Image (tube, rainbow, N blue to C red; front, side, top):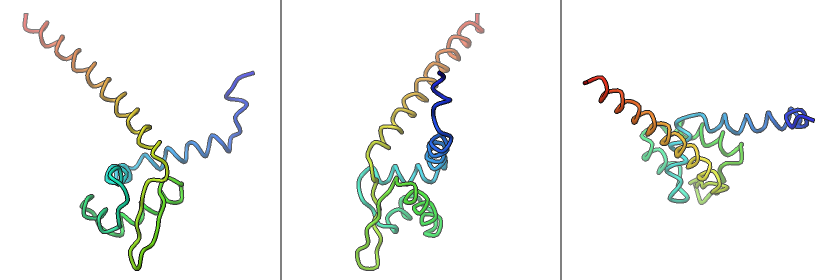
Length: 117
């Protein structure tokens, strides 16, 4: 039996939805700021150099996906990462991309050396 056939389509859709949340550059920037710990919305606005409306829109999506948690204190909302495993996932992707770029650089260097001769 093929493993792909045994996975319900709802599960596959949930995984795809999770990755789609991470496919937005601004959300990755927000996550990167949150590596240092909990931040209020204003801190995130300043760190990402964008509008409060834009930050709030992305925070809502990540909150609904379960990537972030939110707590209120007075009139301020504070956000933090729900599970640090998200950073491991990002690190794996970044390491893979860095390896590819390093390999490409070797090819370019080898090509440029051979083309001079």
